[in-house]
Length: 253
Image (tube, rainbow, N blue to C red; front, side, top):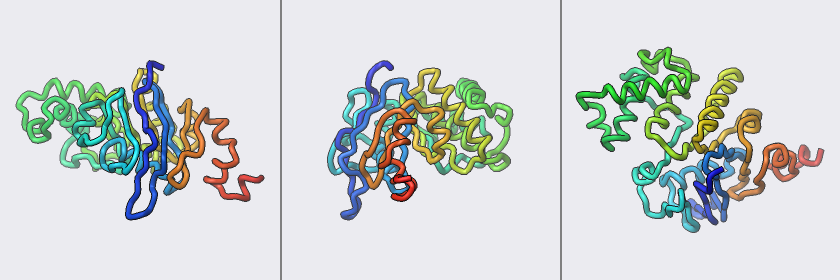
């Protein structure tokens, strides 16, 4: 670990009187792969959106490398090093995988999708894109259109596009959702390899077996509150965590 990279301090978010997050505090160290887990409706996505700037907390602060993100736009937060891989993959279906990633790489340089798309010389971005496709294991489909490929490839494409922005912190929203066991394990291995190369990650994921396998530390939310934090085995053995996931009878078993 090389110091604290991300911190949420007493973050509270309400929607029309409904409390989505209540006084949530946790941090992520540089080069850490932290799992943020919890049952449906726990507040995980709201926490992620508080980091990216889609949601504005009514109380509390979010800092990245000591920079308070309050009042910053989504684009300004990206320039501070936040990358985001979404659960729902929305590539440019009229472009190849290579060009999808090259466009993201160009956007990182020009800060304008239009200029990135129509730049005359994109050789550097295309070379970078090919490297990233190789890094996530789908270079064999570089020339293919997204519509021609299965979900496993598209999930990896989403990660490659996020990496094209050269993030210091990659936020991952359920990257394994919809994948079969073999595909999920392979993508989880890729994420662990990226983290091994030094990339910091915050992972939201319902596939608990893979989360426990690749994450060294977990934060658990339930009903908008943090209920547990620590190493996976200890966290998942807690009665309150089991109750949140499985119900009262299972927690007492």
